[in-house]
Image (cartoon, rainbow, N blue to C red; front, side, top):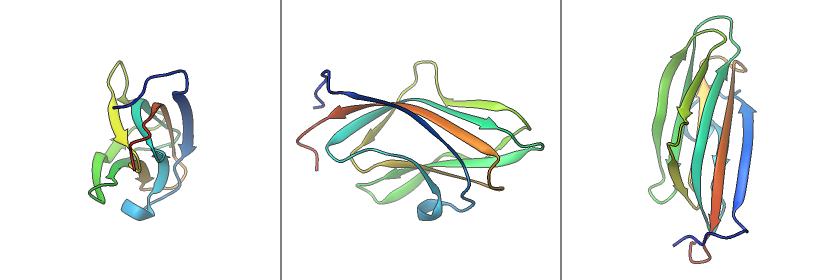
Length: 124
């Protein structure tokens, strides 16, 4: 069980998506550190494109060595916003799990996220 304490880590970060391929070739958005569990509390996409473009976000399960889609070729209008995880929703990640993303045209999307990480010395 994760230990809730003052040593919990809170992160907010973001990237401009440049990758155009899926899986291991996609751009790393976030990876849960060793000996931590993480709660993704916010995941937001902003499109600065002048036309409709597609973005994909994949979840990588480290124990299964498998990629699954959170968003698969999601079409966003020009200069639009989309909340993937917001409003109290949560997505749990475990040590080694990660989120990756890619788009059909490099540089059109910014993805921003917030996590809370919980230290668990029993995780490998």
